[in-house]
Image (cartoon, rainbow, N blue to C red; front, side, top):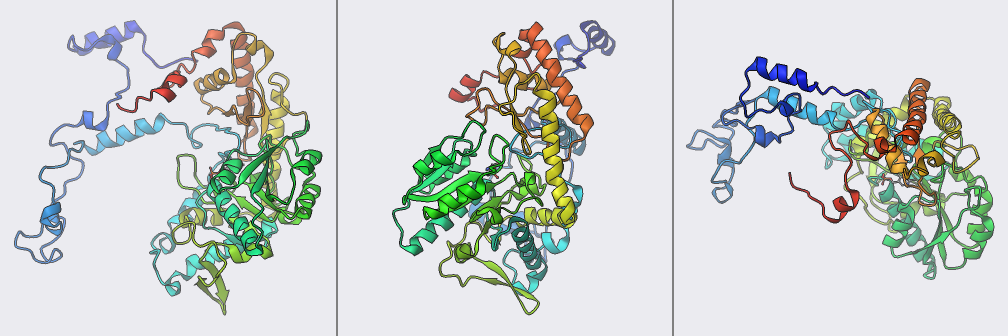
Length: 520
Ligand SMILES: *Cc1c(COP(=O)(O)O)cnc(C)c1O
């Protein structure tokens, strides 16, 4: 990689030509200005001038002529002006543009972060969510003035029911983990109503997403871990040993964190049901199944989806998420309120559900995110939705098949939307780890894959290309991974010191965790 740092001689030439003071060293030239906005502040410099914000009339015709501060009761008004950066508009634009370039984003870089589905978020979603009728609606508005939004929520629920094979959906949860929480609350309410208080265990395979056992524990259940077989799937024999009249829920991540489909799901779900348990599916990675499989048809009783992954709404530091839980008929009465109902062509909100678990989020959840997801759903036909899953699977298998010659794959099986690889012997022989490969990728302009997850794979490298990447981008990533192997085998230090081109270089991660320095 080349960098844009000017050579020392070039810097000297610049310094001399510019007649810079001796306090400026040649090392300063060409360096980005890393100061905080407050450090760049110059007293009196302004982007926008605020005059009297309110006219005398608006502020109640006060004697002072109506300054904005007249609205603030005397006891609360500040005595001194706040210490804010004083900058021109251009300074501010440059400041934030520079900061924005320091972060990786889907819009700028390939982002193969396994399990996170960092795919392209179509801009039309943003336009839909910004429509005045949606974005301008007050959350306390009466049903009569919220018909458009209620219709959108109602129709989104219905469409998700059809895609998932479920009887009813709630859109209230704010994320995947929050959906799990909601789903297990529903399971809890179900067993409480049955008067079955002995069911305190939740079975999670070791290939489950970490949030599954964590959510179980958070709700006071005991997570029971079962081992995957050599094919990366639940071993029915081991499941049989752990199922009992203490089992409340069998909680499966499908596809699991190895990127593998639980192909014996019907048999497994049947076993759980015979033991009196419910089957929960973590469908956060539904982009691998959408249009191809209806989990409800396979015996799943409760499932969640992550609209911010499957339905392409910005996430991962780029915005809030929205989950969604689908349930079978016998669990519908426990869903959060309000439910959106339709009668005689009008939409109403309904709180009259005595067995509901109540509210898990204010109002209707993250409606802005749901509006984006709805737009995404509307723009794809049923066939195109299946095409999303097919391309997600095709892309992951393409990358796996090209990379596994050098980076051994954990499983010989075809994967779904992501694959799990490990570092080659040529690198481990030099003391190099997955972390070193991940850091070196940054130098080439790629976001690192998910690493060291799932925990059951030593030195895991989990790659999810998503369905929106082109073959050229995937090829370029593959070539880079192969080049990194060669670099590491010949010059291991190059990888150990990576990244070389990022604003923040290699951190001492142990020290950063134990003695975090959180001040500028
Ligand atoms: C992303 C993910 C989650 C968590 O979702 P959040 O929205 O981040 O809470 C749970 N399970 C799986 C399988 C996931 O991929």
